[in-house]
Image 1 (cartoon, one colour):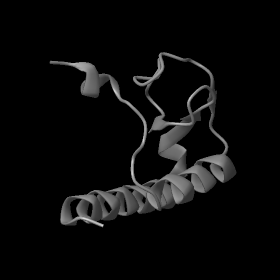
Image 2: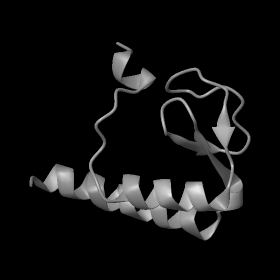
Image 3: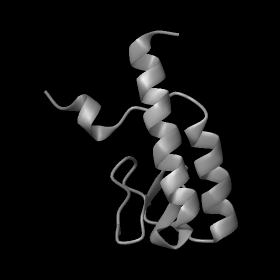
Length: 80
């Protein structure tokens, strides 16, 4: 694994830990499984608007996403 990939994975693990410690501040998009803040109305990744805000789902998704590299395309990836 490259140093860049390791750094990214470490950053994802740190972010996941922050989410796990405060699941009430987040929700999971039902359409694309992204974790977004509880203030978001439309998912910035898929433009969906259905969310699961149960702590169990948020914590499980944070564990899952925090242990692997990003493999989704974000809107910011398409800019340029």
